[in-house]
Amino acid sequence: MSRGPKPVYQPRFTEEEVAEARIVASRHREAHVRVQRAKMLLLLNANPEMSTPEVARTVGVHEQTVRKWRRRWFKEGFSLDDRKGRGRKPTFSP
Image 1 (cartoon, helix red, strand yellow):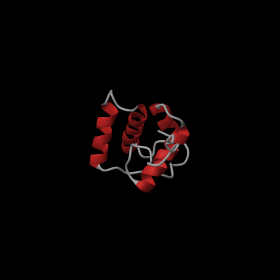
Image 2 (cartoon, helix red, strand yellow):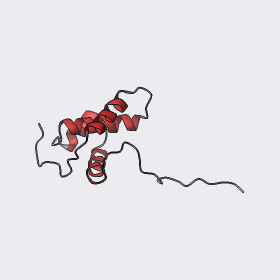
Image 3 (cartoon, rainbow, N blue to C red):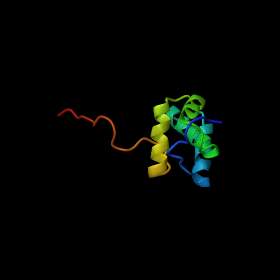
């Protein structure tokens, strides 16, 4: 298993959330980032104390991405999507 201190954020998921993540993780025609997040969720659900570097290596994402989603799931609950309202605002020509 992992060495070092336990991760601060260890989110818990409902059976429905895990079931949705399984469906998304198995889809071939799904946004790659959603599939990665679903796989990360499934991994953390099975091994909540798994170290951030281990999760990052297994899923193929940066450690900071794992930290971000662990914290978000712990504080805000389940989601596989980016927050609304991010990014450049649309511009319209007159």
